[in-house]
Image (tube, rainbow, N blue to C red):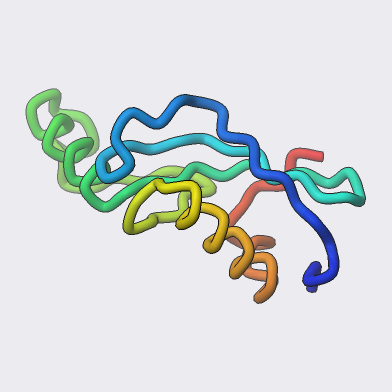
Length: 101
Protein backbone atom coordinates (compact mmCIF):
# COMPACT_ATOMS: atom_id res chain seq x y z
CA UNK A 1 0.00 0.00 0.00
CA UNK A 2 1.16 3.52 -0.77
CA UNK A 3 -0.88 5.17 2.00
CA UNK A 4 2.09 7.11 3.28
CA UNK A 5 3.17 8.25 -0.18
CA UNK A 6 2.14 11.45 -1.80
CA UNK A 7 0.95 11.51 -5.37
CA UNK A 8 0.43 14.17 -7.98
CA UNK A 9 -2.37 14.10 -10.54
CA UNK A 10 -1.64 15.72 -13.90
CA UNK A 11 -4.61 16.05 -16.25
CA UNK A 12 -3.47 16.06 -19.86
CA UNK A 13 -6.49 17.86 -21.35
CA UNK A 14 -8.92 20.54 -20.32
CA UNK A 15 -12.25 19.14 -19.16
CA UNK A 16 -15.07 20.88 -21.02
CA UNK A 17 -18.03 19.25 -19.23
CA UNK A 18 -17.51 17.51 -15.89
CA UNK A 19 -20.59 15.34 -16.48
CA UNK A 20 -19.91 14.34 -20.11
CA UNK A 21 -16.23 14.07 -20.91
CA UNK A 22 -13.11 11.99 -20.48
CA UNK A 23 -9.59 12.99 -19.56
CA UNK A 24 -6.20 11.34 -19.66
CA UNK A 25 -4.10 11.69 -16.54
CA UNK A 26 -0.69 10.79 -15.18
CA UNK A 27 -0.43 9.87 -11.51
CA UNK A 28 3.10 10.35 -10.16
CA UNK A 29 4.46 9.13 -6.82
CA UNK A 30 7.39 10.29 -4.69
CA UNK A 31 9.37 7.16 -5.63
CA UNK A 32 9.42 8.42 -9.27
CA UNK A 33 6.92 5.80 -10.46
CA UNK A 34 4.09 7.08 -12.62
CA UNK A 35 0.90 5.63 -14.04
CA UNK A 36 -1.45 6.50 -16.90
CA UNK A 37 -5.22 6.42 -16.57
CA UNK A 38 -8.22 7.78 -18.44
CA UNK A 39 -11.21 8.95 -16.43
CA UNK A 40 -14.62 8.71 -18.14
CA UNK A 41 -18.11 9.66 -17.06
CA UNK A 42 -20.99 7.28 -17.72
CA UNK A 43 -22.69 9.97 -19.81
CA UNK A 44 -19.54 10.30 -21.93
CA UNK A 45 -19.39 6.57 -22.57
CA UNK A 46 -23.03 6.65 -23.67
CA UNK A 47 -22.27 9.59 -26.00
CA UNK A 48 -19.34 7.71 -27.52
CA UNK A 49 -21.45 4.58 -28.04
CA UNK A 50 -24.21 6.64 -29.64
CA UNK A 51 -21.66 8.18 -32.00
CA UNK A 52 -20.30 4.70 -32.79
CA UNK A 53 -23.81 3.61 -33.73
CA UNK A 54 -23.80 6.31 -36.41
CA UNK A 55 -20.24 5.59 -37.60
CA UNK A 56 -20.48 1.77 -37.44
CA UNK A 57 -17.51 1.55 -35.08
CA UNK A 58 -17.46 -1.16 -32.38
CA UNK A 59 -20.29 -3.12 -34.00
CA UNK A 60 -22.35 0.03 -34.45
CA UNK A 61 -22.03 1.06 -30.83
CA UNK A 62 -22.63 -2.38 -29.36
CA UNK A 63 -19.57 -2.11 -27.16
CA UNK A 64 -16.94 0.30 -25.87
CA UNK A 65 -13.60 -0.32 -24.25
CA UNK A 66 -10.50 1.62 -23.27
CA UNK A 67 -7.34 0.54 -21.55
CA UNK A 68 -6.63 1.98 -18.10
CA UNK A 69 -10.23 3.22 -17.88
CA UNK A 70 -11.82 4.39 -14.63
CA UNK A 71 -15.48 5.47 -14.74
CA UNK A 72 -16.51 8.33 -12.45
CA UNK A 73 -19.82 9.99 -11.60
CA UNK A 74 -18.27 13.31 -12.67
CA UNK A 75 -14.88 14.78 -13.51
CA UNK A 76 -14.70 17.35 -10.74
CA UNK A 77 -11.27 17.76 -9.16
CA UNK A 78 -12.71 16.49 -5.88
CA UNK A 79 -14.10 13.29 -7.43
CA UNK A 80 -10.87 12.61 -9.30
CA UNK A 81 -8.72 13.22 -6.20
CA UNK A 82 -10.89 11.09 -3.92
CA UNK A 83 -10.96 8.28 -6.48
CA UNK A 84 -7.19 8.22 -6.90
CA UNK A 85 -6.72 8.37 -3.12
CA UNK A 86 -9.06 5.37 -2.65
CA UNK A 87 -7.47 3.34 -5.45
CA UNK A 88 -4.02 3.99 -3.96
CA UNK A 89 -5.22 3.13 -0.45
CA UNK A 90 -6.63 -0.22 -1.62
CA UNK A 91 -3.76 -0.92 -4.07
CA UNK A 92 -6.35 -1.24 -6.86
CA UNK A 93 -4.44 1.39 -8.83
CA UNK A 94 -1.99 -1.39 -9.70
CA UNK A 95 -4.67 -3.04 -11.83
CA UNK A 96 -6.63 0.05 -12.90
CA UNK A 97 -3.72 2.22 -14.06
CA UNK A 98 -0.92 1.46 -16.53
CA UNK A 99 2.61 1.90 -15.18
CA UNK A 100 4.64 4.17 -17.47
CA UNK A 101 7.77 4.72 -15.34
